[in-house]
Length: 227
Image 1: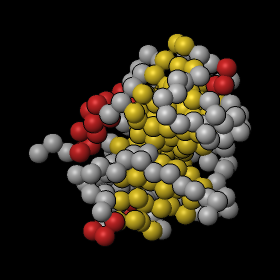
Image 2: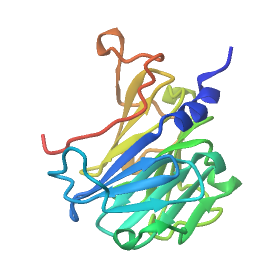
Image 3: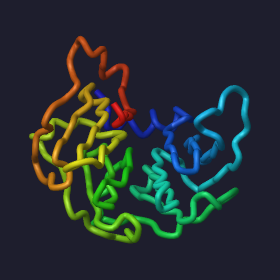
Image 4: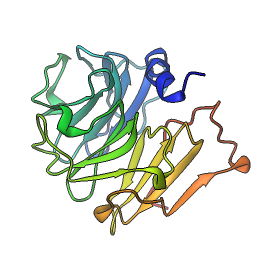
């Protein structure tokens, strides 16, 4: 039987609309679509058959994106190359784009990355599918090359099967939410600012009543911290 870890990259490639990220300050919606990233203006009111304001294209299949609107920086995950490409001055980019920096190499422990965020400490956080882990890198603004993580959530106690898209609530001590299609759950790691090692999530949304299932492959998660 083929394990879900092996299926996920192919599943990602066949689902063209892969991820979205909102630059709230500039009211821009970034939408990852295979090798293109479409940028829609007036995101809070956009509706119907509207054309993107800009189209960004990269030389690889995109699996996840994150726009750091405060610093106008775009992070793009290249799952096939176990890499994260970083683009500065994101709001000025258009057409074919080239990364200012790339996080890649054996020391990074990137392994089929599927999600990317910047946490409240300014660290770059990446979820990895195979083997499943969450890797954390200091100074997201300057991360580059074969840089080792400063923290890594990995091991049997995590309960991860396929760590996919993530979202972080940066308030307080930080909380990370991880969508895991292999475990059919959303795992919640509280105190994320200091989380490290083979640790169990503080809680998880999982079970028959949730209607989350391995067959349904829950790969995305979002968090509304205004409620």
